Image 1: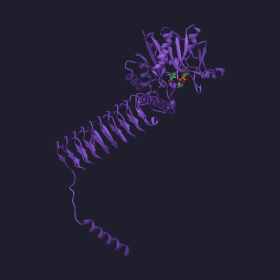
Image 2: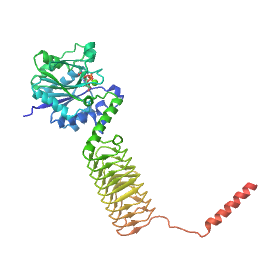
Image 3: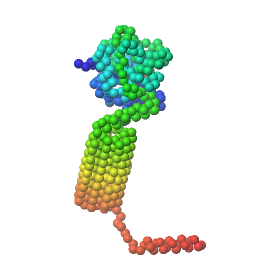
Image 4: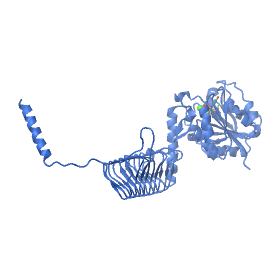
Length: 451
Ligand code: UD1
Ligand code: CA
């Protein structure tokens, strides 16, 4: 039987160095707030109870927490008095006596596996467990003092002696506390230290002194990368993208220049998809096996079926739904539109709030005029229809199956199936006009030059 576990996520930081009106933990990486990444890892680790500690007046953070982890409880830390004090803000949740895993919402790269490593340490009988890493630069981190395999103490940078500062084994920040002893240890934490804060990390030393077991388990430094400013946010994004690209390639996706392709946390992409350089996948994109996304395409909230070809320089906005073997070419924007099997929209078009029937051919420069300044309207293009280049389809309007629209038309009324609609000025031809015009103008110019 798995031990019941509560995750406590500290999200009460002020985030001043972000210089942002948005709370730090709501800044996104790979299209999702940092807090939501942490909550996702918690859930992936099999934990179904979470308490989120927020700063005063942070309803916006509470809303995201409750959306991404329904049923979580939100606690307010009225004053920032340290990480130990922040955990105790969730006292009501701690009273249940479950094992506790403490995480920071500004440390978004933590993997579920590492949370499981902490749980396993408790399963092995530890009362306190932390994750340690060998820091490239340990400055600023708490140092882990390990003696004979036991974690005897964590010394914060500001309280460390020069000898302790020389220790390279650092506290990653996550901590697991065994349910039976968690509150007793947390309540014993004082604030007699350089910062005058209640340090969560003191729980290790208190446990050791009481003859309880505290341990440190290894974690990769990357996973505990903390975000305090925009540069660290960008670094976290870069690391997350490396992971997402690696995962896509592992699933059989070809990325010609992986470092130029950006995915969202939820991008679903099938095997044998080829993604050319410089593509962007916003949230909510699903690409089925065998599609090709050509260079410089921007996709968000879109679905692309197998055999389809998108771009180069295509934009698929939310609700774009491309069927099998559809072709969407350069400088085409698609929004809220079903494009059915085999249809082609090859160049320079806007197709919004529309259906394009199977095998229809949409000529270069075709625009669905979906907005009248107040409301959006739908354009329905039948299967096999042929829309001549540079046509404007003024919605609401329907073009029947296998109908033709002459190039340069402005279509304001429905077109019957198999019909031809031409809606443009008739061509007029005046024999010899251009020649006469040239002669008149040349003469005018010559007389001006003389006079
Ligand atoms: C903490 C650890 C340190 C570890 C490092 C890893 C302590 C005392 N030290 O140090 O050992 O190496 O993380 O990054 O825990 N927070 C609150 N309320 C508070 C204080 C903090 O919610 O009153 C939140 C912060 O928003 C942040 C997290 O807790 O997300 C960590 O706090 P921070 O002050 O950054 O701790 P560090 O000094 O980095
Ligand atoms: Ca920190």
